[in-house]
Picture 1 (spheres, rainbow, N blue to C red):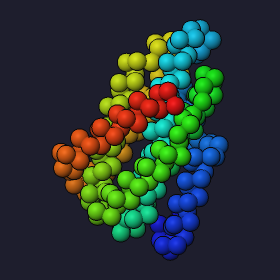
Picture 2: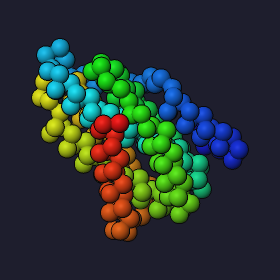
Picture 3: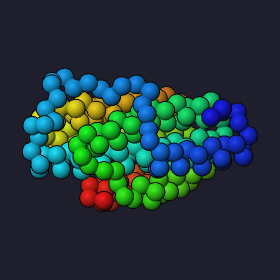
Picture 4: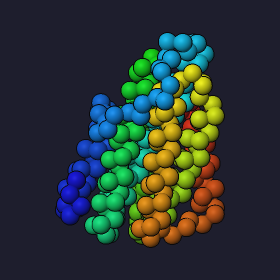
Length: 214
């Protein structure tokens, strides 16, 4: 969406983005990261497939939430340049959304049944962050991306070693999230208060624990 669009156009754009994120089929602008070793998907045991599917479902939920956060923060940003920053980050996250969605299909698994709820909750949180001002909104991005980066790093230690494709996707996502955090810092982010960071971690733990199964 044009960063200089009217408020009503941005609202309708945010609604369209919500519907496409939760109910649409996503196509990446760039190919999914290639595995460094030959794909061994057929060699995964049933237990390994279930574990990879659960972890990639959690990662897909994270990308659904990222779309909601960036959409709501772009909607509330005062500065058109910052709005463009959020929109550019959302485009990167769309690739992640498509990669994780396709990987779930390849593993014979599904996305979270609660994606509409995850999107709505993240959108509301993003609105609150955006209303607090651009600097704090950027600070929220920094903290979110740092937590996601740590979360993805943890998944790399849990994914089956034979699941080269999932591991390649997660590694690329981790690197992109670190870049988004750095970009937000350079754009003028303010550090969030410690209690808010702790609350974000607690909420993320509930979300990831639930999405592992649902």
